[in-house]
Image 1 (cartoon, each protein chain N blue to C red):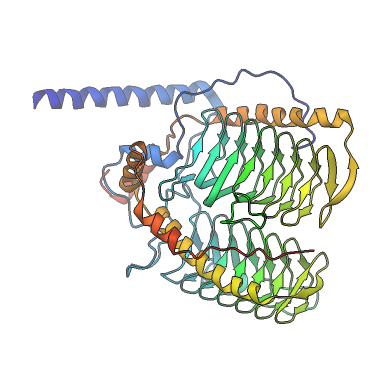
Image 2 (cartoon, each protein chain N blue to C red):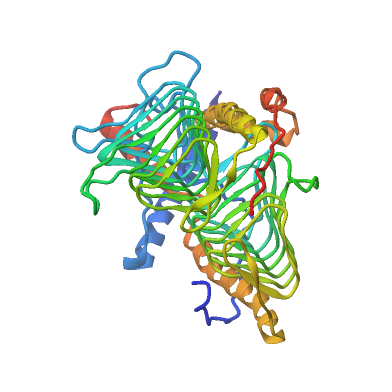
Amino acid sequence: MVMGRALYSVGFWIRETGQALDRLGCRLQGKNHFREQLSRHRTLMNVFDKSPSVDKQAFVAPSASLIGNVHVGPASSIWYGCVLRGDANSISVGAGTNIQDNTLVHVAKSNLSGKVLPTLIGDNVTIGHSAVLHGCTVEDEAYIGASATVLDGAHVEKQAMVESGALVRQNTRIPSGEVWGGNPARFLRKVTEEEKAFFSSSAVDYSNLAQVHAVENTKNLDETDFKKLLYKKNSRDAEYDSVLSDLSLSENVPKSA
Amino acid sequence: MATSIARFSRRGVASTLIRRWFAAEAALAMQTEPPKPKLTVSPSPSLDRVKWDYRGQRQIIPLGQWLPKVAVDAYVAPNAVLAGQVTVWDGSSVWNGAVLRGDLNKITLGFCSNVQERCVVHAAWSSPTGLPAETLIDRYVTVGAYSLLRSCTIEPECIIGQHSILMEGSLVETRSILEAGSVVPPGRRIPSGELWGGNPARFIRTLTNEETLEIPKLAVAINHLSGDYFSEFLPYSTVYLEVEKFKKSLGIAV
């Protein structure tokens, strides 16, 4: 008992010494020293009275930014590094949609044609990595390929597909069930039946995957430390294995030109 | 950054013996009180979604039994996100805003390679080629900024231009260069020693021997640069002091 107290005090002395040394080091570094601040990144940020409303069952990665008038439906997922900036107008994301890593969804306040359009993204849409969506409408079960750019006023109809790397120019209408690609985007071919099935299954798969990420990202310190302990003992995580087996992952990659 | 580096000075990179975790995680080892309500997500009925978490985004996110592994002298920017099965080998660097998401399959970043700013590296579950769909970035590869790499294999000593897109199953053979903005469709192969570019990627010309020798030099130059960044960060963050001050100001017991 006395030993315990003694060790505790010694521990404190060592910590205090450490902190004092840290301050000394800062002073030696002079004006170039850097003091770390708390992360001020705001995942959900409101601009005056416009604030995001995200469904409880959606996954929003902590490094994503949802700013202003953004509405996200249930079972949707917004992945790492996305920016959904609804400051000038509104963004609404439907249910079961996934907006993959590093995409930018923005709304136009004014554009050349003078029309101001909110961005509407429907249900079960898959928006690939690093896409840029600006003031456009995407209907249900569409597929926006990775790194695609969809500009103001574009309208992607149900089950249409925008190829990877495509640039869909302003006010382009992509009819239902067609694949458009290239820069500027033009009609390539029709969506095959298996690709249509792929769109819906990929949306579901992503929702499931999002749950795993959601659980992991919301762990507090004790849980993450416990997990590290598990790694040291090389144990398997039944939770993740079960999610993986649930995913009916037979990714049919759409062939492209 | 990619092409205007002329610094080849030899730097003794002091390799730390301590693994660096994301700042707040290690710092919070001091905290005894569980932090304020965080982002809560489905399916349990939960409070209003929290808008701000002072911990920010964790850099390394373990999923299931996989923990991203970062070599001791690799520089991973604090706002990069490594999730799932990601291995970052020695001398490599992952720059700001990159997302390496190895949740469905493995991602490997080889010796002295670098993944520059805002890249997304993902691995699909299966590849159209039928080969293992892991993303393998071999040694001395420079992946330019804002690229997207999906289940591709990049052999040693390549340069992938900025904003390029490599789709599932693509193979970039050794000593080739992809121009900026190139899109490699799924399952394509970029032969060795050639310069390809465009959307979809087409052959432009073969590389001269001098150019081929420059490729690993670029990777090494970026390695030296990442050494500078690496040494900017302490092994453990001092954010915990700010956290304690913050909690004190809010009246939460520390």
